[in-house]
Amino acid sequence: MKFIIATNNPKKLKELERILNPLGINAVSAKESGVMLDEVEETGVTFAENAFLKANAAFQKTGMPSVADDSGISVDALNGRPGIYSARYAGENATDEQRYNKLLNEMKDVPDKLRTAHFTSAICCILPDGHKIEVEGICEGMISTEPYGNGGFGYDPVFTVNGKSYAELTAEEKDAISHRGQALRKLRTELKKYFDK
Image (cartoon, rainbow, N blue to C red):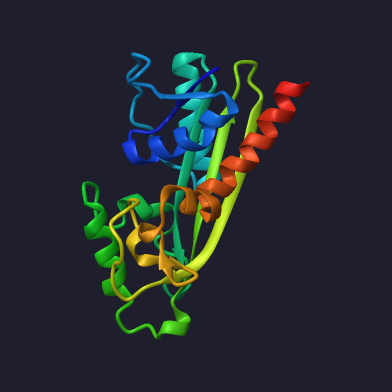
């Protein structure tokens, strides 16, 4: 079954494909299926609201099952920032490096034990009959004082779990613990229930 993944982020698409494909789901970007999705204004105040806006826009445009993820990092010492603004934290067209360097800079005086943070992934899936599935995954960790590793994307080099950054993990290791891996496993369970009906 073909699902539209409502993202323009090729690395995020790859991660979603990797986790959904074993379900027999052919995860494709809108571009791959010959559709241009409009940029969705993320006006939601939660990850879940933004995920719905993106999934719904893709569904309205294509009529195909649509999946969208909205995710980000929330840092306790920064009162939960950057949160839903993670992608725009260092300005509209900033690179991953600029974003995590801004974060490290803002935290330069925060002691190790207070550098707690968590990643959230909210996923919304809209099926052809209009049925909506919403799931969320959260991974607790710490913000390192400098970047480590060269895998992953976004804030992965500065987010550590059990002494290793997301960027130092293999794809399989990351999927096993990550916020997105957790959310997608929940989605898989819900989709299975839905298809079994």
